[in-house]
Length: 136
Image (cartoon, rainbow, N blue to C red; front, top):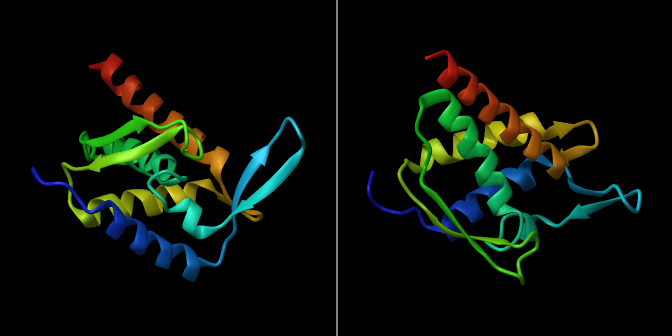
């Protein structure tokens, strides 16, 4: 696939999935010892948590298939975590959504979807990829 997916469409579908799932999206501030529930609209925004969801999902897809979805991020000091989604390409809409849904499932606990766990999902998928590469 050579085209790019519509970021707003990906966000709108993810909005629906998150709303129907009914689990809170939780950002932990370990230094302050507090958890903040992130509104769904902030979670799915290109300048919100969408880069984190996509980054974790792409790592899972790369682990499972050997190929990602050409995610392009750009630095944005005004974005929630300092990054904005620039483009999503190289994969089908279905592949992207299934990968993100799996990342969400792996980052979920009884307290909700834990944003910090998306980092763990990425790290574990990347470690599995590296492990296979070193064995080859």
